[in-house]
Image 1 (tube, rainbow, N blue to C red):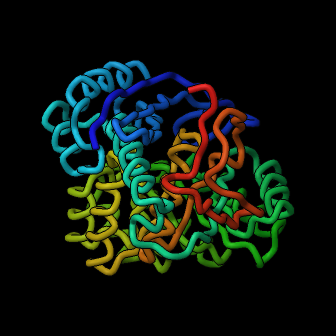
Image 2: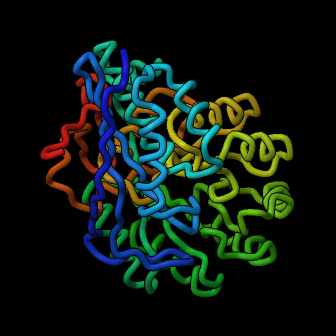
Length: 355
């Protein structure tokens, strides 16, 4: 099988309402949607969802780099995915979002070639998984109201964005737990917004409120601080912005600097490096979460397949399609609340209309 053509286009998606995290307010997202065609008539779809302050690139750079990759990859075998990465890595360091787009499209093709959904191609057997849904930062009352609304929609796991200051964050969590009751799992994500001292100060309250875990309390470079918090906390500590590539996962595992790692396809460069991160974490007896940033159904569904294929990926944070809308990319999965069932169509199982 050979690649005959690679096509890219820009796409824009809006959130149902503004979404605030510790370091930004997001109103929607733009992505690069990519299609790879082959000489066997099989096409695969991928997507790059860059976020400059996380991935270091933007939509314009993705389009430029993708065109450079296109020139080198036409004529190669898309199912030889490690070779695809070797070619891309030999040309550019970083640019993980655009590398993820090519990686996802190639996995889509490989699974379609085998006639199986991607999760089965990756070795999985169960198409069912359950995701949390993320609550953006607002007033305690507004966040509690949002949480109750999502609970009433059938979501039993909520991830709460924090990181402004621990006084207001404490008020937020007390209001949320009081409003949703004890039958909802709550996770918190500070997005690097706390200091070591603040994290240790708020941790007892989070324990009292039966919070499941704390995600990325400290700055991404503070591996030593993350290690100290892990040693002193009674709650599991998850690394997100500290864990981009397999090398980061190895450092975190070697230092015992966290209990788990949040893998995102856009951070690490796609499915192939995501599987390597999970293997490192699993060997170190650490669990993984699979998360998302600004991606549509294409990349989000690909991540769902990865999560469904690996038991060590025990936390699912693939919620962006629950609060954004797209009518020209369909399929992939169906959901009831946070409970997801992947399509049994070959590959990712999505249909892209008009591209």
